Image 1 (cartoon, rainbow, N blue to C red):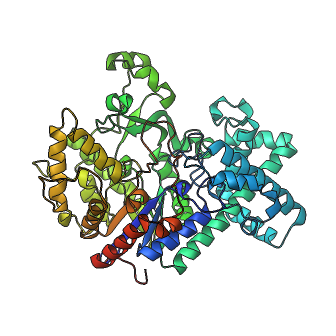
Image 2: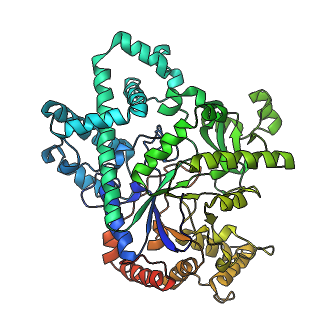
Image 3: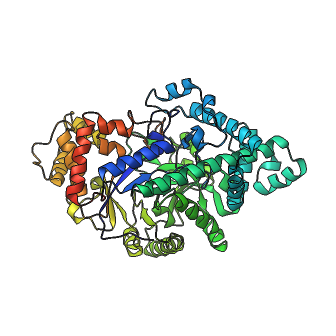
Length: 562
């Protein structure tokens, strides 16, 4: 694992789905990622940071994937030259025209259309057996350790009408080993064909993403992936390897007043629904599941972010599934205990309230992370250490050489003032927002609205603190999110000592596009209004981006040749 502390770099964070390019089918795809690489190269941005690209479940969240290894087909480019067996006339012009309209992703339509095109390509590919057939078969052999289980799960998922709740499937297919016995006995032809189809889909995606990696190298841009801490309880991993997971609990995060729009999060916390890990079983298998996951990630990316690294030390867990949240919302703790057999949401294995428990949690997390980091070689690894951070986590990460995050709004002195960006350690990632936080435009407008409202004293104090952080007059904060304020906010992080100054794509552009609001409906559906190339060419964005490029150069962070 390698972070070059002599470097000071810039990162651009974006979900692939939000990108846009001419000719896409209503969602960002691998060709749009290629354009994003060009965008980074032009602005001197060294790292393009992508949210997870694994195949998603029905909520379309990249943090609730149905496979820790399979790639999301909706993000593949469906151009004939990129999909063996696909011909141009099979892509209706109307689909392309509809894809260019609107800023909201229609996932059911996108997924249905892309699947239909991939099925046509697969049928022709099998019929013609082109020279790349040998490459496809080699991919199936080299990835058999996960592809066999995933492809069967995916084929059975279709057979069950798209319902991933494998615990409600017929008994003969409710678990992988049972399904293999049933498959050998029955050998349904259509199911066998479906398995091959889903293997073909993954091969197509693998080729595209490997090509993207090569292109990034040619432009001197590095790709940073994202390994979510959890995976879907109703995915192929749990179905294939149930002993590795504890499905009696649902992982999440403790209550937070920060999410004022969600009563459940304020009262009970975030219930992500992810199963917990049976760490003893992972250790008994020499962490083979994790080693495979890391190796697969590094086939595409030059480094990765560990999502919710706190979960390796201790995880907040619920004794009920997310679909039961509404029923628990009005209950008192005593009433909730009565419904769950005496259990309440809590930290597992234990909270950090007692020093002995905290020491145990620290030792446990360090041991697990050391084991996983041993698989990363020279790849760069950063860790999302946000939320209720135990006192021992950041020192432990620093000792392992793993940068954590510095978000100005959360880094405070005893008097609640912002800690100066000049005090951030070199081994850190300075940013204003991850995918969970509002972009700068929304953050600042919200502050001003509260300041000008009937009870604006607290907001006024917060505006003053922000102005001091920016080096501006605290008595005259702007009443609007102006271009000058925007660039000043970016400049402060660019000038910080942090190894990486990372910016959400919305914040580089100075727009209000938000991709995720925890607890809200219609998450992960927002798209950028323009392609990144159009943002670079069109006013007023072109002028702001030119100014950003100048600031990047002045800060010493701009990549050579950018």
